[in-house]
Image (tube, rainbow, N blue to C red; front, side, top):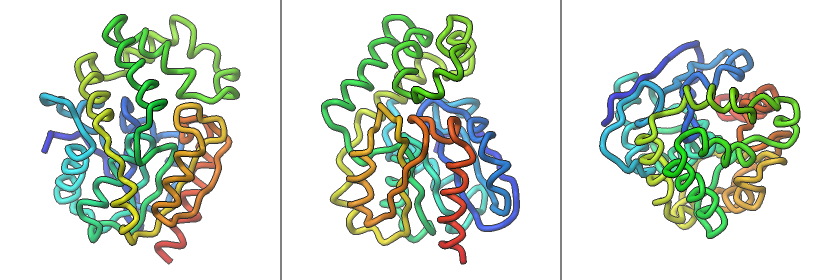
Amino acid sequence: MARLRYRLEGEGPPVVLLNGIFQRLESWDPVLPHLTGFTLLRYDMRGQGESEAPEGPYPPRAHAEDLLALLDEAKLSRPALVGLSNGGIVAMEAALLAPERFSALVLCCTTPYLDAALRAKVESWLHALKTGGTVLRLRVALPWVFGRGFLEAHPELLAEEGLRGLAAQAPTKTAQERLLLGFLTLEDLRPRLKALALPALVLYGTEDLLFPKAYASNLAEALRARLEALPAGHAAPIEAPLAFARAVRAFLEEVYA
């Protein structure tokens, strides 16, 4: 297990929030005021934030094994997993490794497989990172990550100063490469997911260009899960925190009723 920075807060049924690929645990701050009544575990995955960045790459299985070890350390029993993007993939992998250790899955703006289009998008980030560092990777990636409405409301994100500010919060270049290379090892999880008997909610952003609705629909079909739309791009908890939290809360209240 990598040494992981984590934060455990709140009271109530346990929920783990799993970051997108380059995020820190603070990325969940916008939704926290709307998720009271739960014990929330947030953490930086290996290579993210202040957690350890061992030799890579970091495939979903490695992240999932880290999560299982972290649950032991935090003494958290049978939480629900709420995963965004790569965090959703990690949630799926962990549930497939140890389904008895979890109560439910909420999978947002994620995918259970790679196809040629998605692989090309992510590989373009990797090439941009190697060519021009984090700022160029962000310049290439942000139009895929944030929806049209959010970018129109926040033009500063695409300005040079905004890009440099985001770059300062990102993992090191080496850690980003390890995270991306690990993501690109994703195998098709759908055959295994069909045998998973956990309550699941699949959320997608109506403006998500990175993982459009088709990925969510295929995931929901494999899991026999409810499928719901959010008025957002790929970074739904940041773009539409209230809508995201309401969907999560309504589902988890059913699970924990």
